[in-house]
Length: 250
Image (cartoon, rainbow, N blue to C red; front, side, top):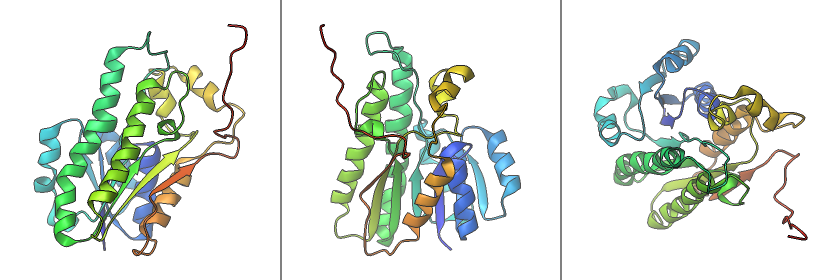
């Protein structure tokens, strides 16, 4: 039975991924900062789920991760770098710089921490899978996406470079790039708890749900090991990337 580490497991994609992979028969380590949310999730799942308090931005905590795990949950066969967030949608010249730093530390530095700690063990075993949660924001610019989009562009390129470094080894790497997704805390966090503003993002749209991403992860980890899905971009049918906006009579 393979062991999966899922970061950002307390809500949204991470929570749904944990639930799905437990149902698939995996052992799952659900890592997040919020112990209360993890404990609530643990009560819903069986003994193959391990709630683990972890802040991915804290290098020392990440470095101690492998030493802190019970033997039952070693080694980690699959790493799902899901922890991430967006903060604010102001134009770059009005953005809160502290928000920029938090996004970089979580979406980039945190992902780097986990990957660098766990990847060497995968290489030793010549087996493993790393799934990174990117975003369509890393492919297409939109107003107010400035640093958030840049962090997800990093995730895309980092994933591609990992694949290149791992060529010849039996380790797969996939970057999942979701578009508009609802039923998560994403927009509530982005708008600093403004529920009305967050709800307006999804009004009248049949959006992607956390279960859609969890089902995608399930398909990936259960797919044949002889092929690798480099990137998978997922949008709701109501969304498309087309259309280059032009402002006339400036």
